[in-house]
Image 1 (cartoon, rainbow, N blue to C red):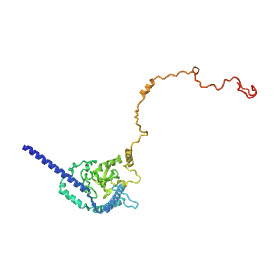
Image 2: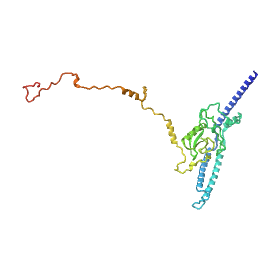
Image 3: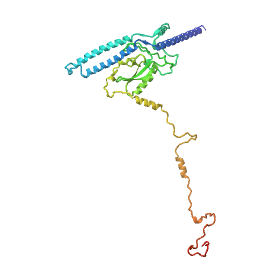
Image 4: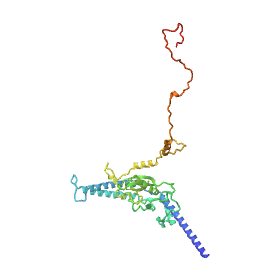
Length: 366
């Protein structure tokens, strides 16, 4: 009896510990979701965008200079001189060095403008609540969403944990990925813009303008359907505080600028056919055809059900029935009923109008 009580007390204590741990996990999940959806204020965002645009243009000029050096075979045994007798490779190398220095200065100024990020007192209170509840001691990868059942599409495996973009992004910003639980109820839209990037030439176009991490799988499938036969990858960036050039991969978290063919489509000569392209018109035509309702029948509906099938057995049965034979018709043998007297007598003589039979009114002559 004593051993049974001990087992019962042990089970009650174990269940109590599991309940407390589950409640703590739910509290930490809610705090992390609130922290992820808290607004992030970046000072001088307009000036930072101007510097980001300048860095993008400088990258384009640097790429053009490198292509010119490659075309002139700079660094090889053949030295190319211009019309004024100067070494063209030396001039390009000097110009390339100046552009690299200018790009470094622009990047430093942009990062300085984006260095101060604050979230206000609400963010500070959320961070303090995480420390108070011991949420920072829990590994992020082990957090589960068991109390809730996810109604939307599942996240890709690479997005189940929040990546640290401060080490990989070229701009050094500490933007965090919204927690997967933030939009499970569907009451709020996301603050991300997803972009479909063609990895062969770096060209891109938007997919969704108010997306969340829950929409990444759907947008990635739509991206691949819009560009059949082309290697594509889904990227995203903050809708209000970032430009398209600042987007990062939804799978790896790497910035777009780190791609080998980033902005390569800008250096394509005008009129040249791209090596890889997307057919958006064909995709939208296929979508419209799939959503088009079925054609209504031209004939009106009837309450009589017609069973259509082969008529060969019935035709064969009709051919077996003997046809009636027609009898020969002889008019002289048939007596036809006559109605009424004869109106004209039989003609016996002709009428002589010059020599009447008697004077005066002439009677009927026969």
